[in-house]
Length: 476
Image (cartoon, rainbow, N blue to C red; front, side, top):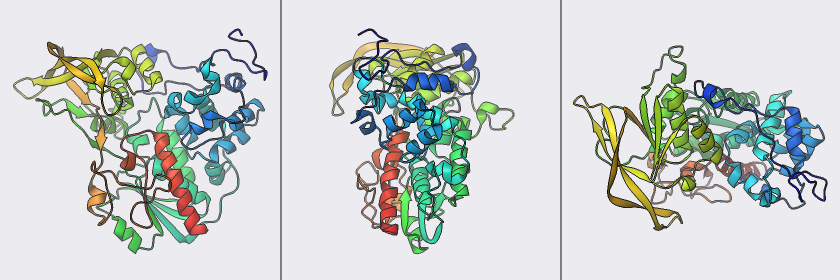
């Protein structure tokens, strides 16, 4: 069978339909979105590649179990409203997920067509439908239809944090007519969607649109309320909330533990990205919130956060950005698309290297880092090959700025102020994987505060399970 030959169902098995995007030389100088999205013709050309499997494995690969063949079939039929409604049945944030979810290891990774050919570009099609849909009302934005119930003020639920898991809970319950109040520690809503993911990957206007729809449907948002300090879980229960959902993420940065980490010019990825994204440092001087813009930048880590930090540093004007990672390029957990884009933009990869010392001048400013050559040894407990030191093999890399993106931990504030709440040895809240309920009746948790740092869609999946259980109990 040739690459473009029709399958027995009349579908095409040719290559995926490319998505238009900014040229690397242009986009590395701005914070506008890299991928420009499908046109209707491009979307339909990609949609017809779907095999419409009767038992679609792609749906099982989706943490929120979108009816993927169902919404794609409606694209083919030119029924974008119908496609949007299908997606909205299980996904509260389709425009977000279409942009930042790791489809290659989830839905697209399970695509039957991908066994012998390129998988259907499910994420791109989801983004197209979400962007193309013009909602007539907040209710339609939340559900894709007119199923929203009148809000019952006697059924109150509180969400602590306004990231993807909490927004999923709020959107689902609001559509069921349950009154939801969301408490956010920062001055802007959206959690990691706003402070963590750069504008060029996820425009903040997309997040605001989703939140505005929830607000119009009766969800109340309170900013500058720190969970565990300004408000505690016991206080919320005493105030008559029927359930409390904890979705505060895992934002406690981890560091490398090597000499020189206190030099001026060292950042955690959390601090760096928050300054740039939430503080709008990329708009300086229009936004009066500057950030150090290094000329020679080294980023440590191999995940999506490391990639975001590196590509942000490029856009802030760095002459050179190097990414140092203890394992090899094939072992990087970052999305392949993000790595591809970063390399196009000029990222220098220094794989199989780990830092052993940061050096500085007599004023305490960072001037360089000494890297240790590594090789891959036997697999560790996680199944990944363990980096092994190559004794005596080191090199010096000059830098005036370094960003550490090697993971995060759980903030202990809520567990410390919630007597009896169970946490594991790493400080993450323990919750039932099917319902999200903690050991405290009526208190639920989901997302990174339960699992550790994971994906937006997995946090949404946890939020959806918790929301369904809360609705079942409150509404019968």
